View (cartoon, helix red, strand yellow):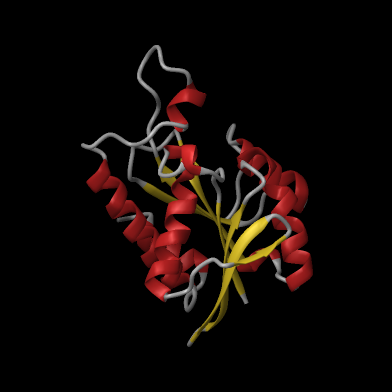
Length: 187
């Protein structure tokens, strides 16, 4: 069984902001697979999908970004999901808007959602898809920037990044994550 986790913040004010790109990708997969996230457990919304490659769960922690691990750890324990079977999707300021970077391990790099996951999972070694949102322009605070929406000019780039992220996740259901990294990190 695979668990795909999109990080973000719950609530209307946060919808489609840079910080919620993980939620947007989970929603895109749910739409594509016809699987609404209508189940709730451990303060997270989820869906279970039976695909030819096996069972897949989509999860959006509703604990707010900085406490993501408080949802993910008990969810993984309850459903007996191994660390190597998760993929975490989140925004990254150090990547240009729309760029994807797949990794199998790494530090939090200042991302509080990832910091919470590392703390609760007890490891930095888990699959992840980092989606670039670029750095804020001079004079804009990082917190204000990540909680704002993408510009109209960035919207087509972001939609393409969402599509590519969905493609990478689908590829990872039948291929080793390292092989998927080699395909999508070069694109």
